[in-house]
Image (cartoon, rainbow, N blue to C red; front, side, top):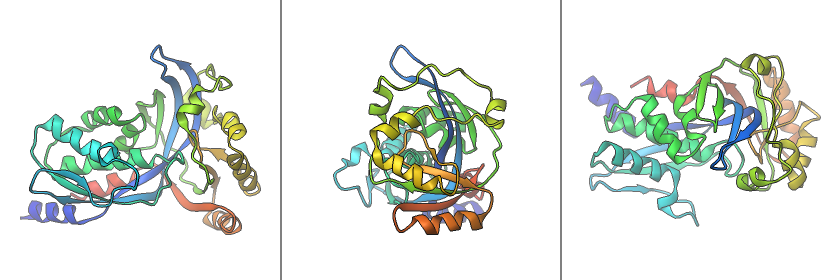
Length: 289
């Protein structure tokens, strides 16, 4: 009876899909297929989308609130559910309801996180019992950032971002600005001015303070609003770019300083305040079932 009650409540609850920050991003090479070889550090923040899953007895997979202008079949949550269904051979269906809080095109990984939450939760709800390693492999088919959200811990990452090693990082407060632009990641990675030969470093080098983002200069030159956001945030903290942006962030040792910055910036910018966390809120919820 306990298992049944747990499963019922799992269907009824909202599941978090947290944002991530890239605390460092180095481009150390390029593969023959054009993909860039990276070194990066991921940390989650407790700013989340929220997903609810409703069983569909017809075996269909669909969105309760599709994004206008985005074909439902291309939505990462739908693709994730269909991938699970294909890989497992199950005949289950689901209606996916997404409460979208993370900005699109901001470098916070919202779509990838939604996909990872779909993989992990449906693996539980559909009783598939796939391992985390298997789900990470499936996630990589959906996008380079999906595996870290499945992994669920702050991570040192290499390759195209899929080779992950757990890292413990101070859980600081963060203020995030979302400039009013959408940075095209493909455009950034195809720009000839982009540094592609940074010297690889060790995890200890990052911990000692080497945390550059090789995309920062290119993005700042191409997107004036990103440069402006970096300037305004730098009054309060060292302003940094997450991934290829557009979001920029600053870290704070105490909540009061973060709130002070947030209050000064919110009249001009779309701004968020959050806490860095080394363990994904999703893993904490999954452990209850």
